[in-house]
Length: 167
Image (cartoon, rainbow, N blue to C red; front, side):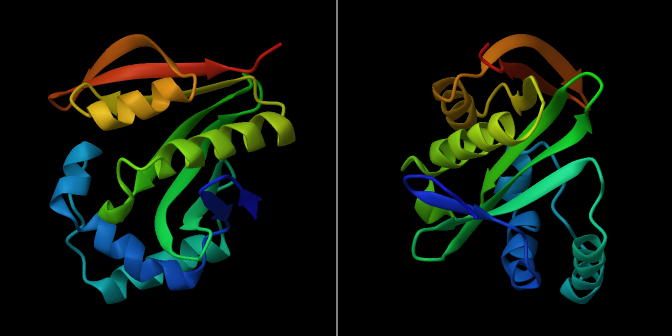
């Protein structure tokens, strides 16, 4: 358990599956992530979910984001971990709209970044966010990420951002 001022990050659990499914089938959340909403039935999703929990990918660390009173409001992760280059990609989702624009995402990113830089040898974190996702861009900038480029993919324009470990 990793604790911030507003959130706790904890390992993913099977009980998170329903929330995660709801968020991954949500059209607006998918649009903000430049993804397509899931269309598979929950029963199929649950089988895949359980499989990933029992055998997580080696280059990915996932966390549930919960409030101090235990409400699961989103997820965050760092992935594509490259120990040779000392870098990884960071991602976050606050799926529960009741917690948007209230500092929960910023606290989760801050706590995750601090955890990564304290507990690993990674020196650089990077991410991409849609040009049009102003909420995410503001959050990442408040957490110290700076833009370093653009990328076009599948008709979407992304801003690339990075954060380097302080020396």
